[in-house]
Image 1 (cartoon, one colour):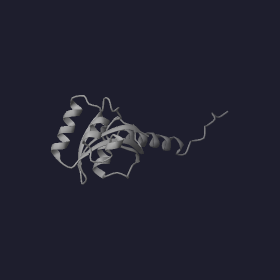
Image 2 (image 1 turned 180 degrees about the vertical axis):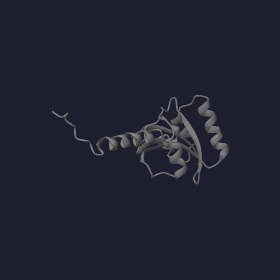
Image 3 (image 1 turned 60 degrees about the horizontal axis):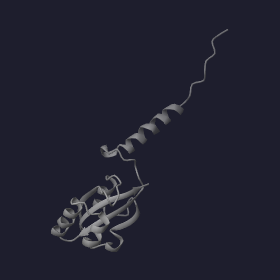
Image 4 (image 1 turned 90 degrees about the horizontal axis):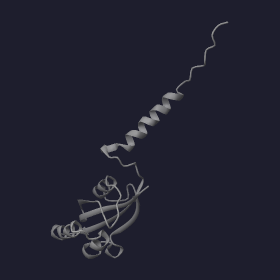
Length: 131
């Protein structure tokens, strides 16, 4: 009796390996540990003048809540505490979006924020959620 041969799989395993490699590249894009997201929930403080942005940053560094500082200093969405709500990728200013998608989510009481200058002015951005 001749030993039985198992039929060779054609491409099945290789395509799975490529998919796994591709997924891990997406998750680690830019050296970030954040999972890829298609939408983010952000808040921002928008100031036309650099000096006003610096005042807002001082308040945040002194421990003030992000939404309270936004109500006081932001020239956009101040009534909502700077909330822009859920926004899908591609719907925001390019500089704002790049910074926001690289930022990990946090709370208004203990915000992790980043500063960005766009055509609209100076932004201080925090992310509340990703999906």
